[in-house]
Image (cartoon, rainbow, N blue to C red):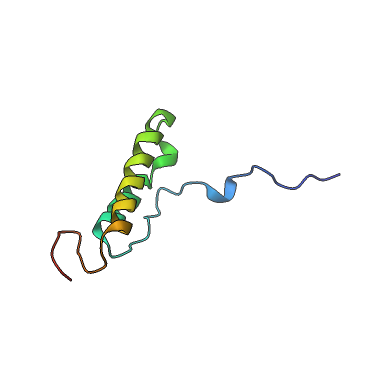
Length: 74
């Protein structure tokens, strides 16, 4: 009997030649860049990097739509 591919992450392998997508929001783009090489960093560093990205993304979501990253109106 052939078992289905469970737990396989080959399709999710990090490609160092690939840049994270650009969103047009400086803070979000910076958060994504900070995670781009996460797969090649020591596991001990993952929590801090993920927590920082989460905080940045949460702040971007909480920011009013009419406020830019630099604090000025759009």
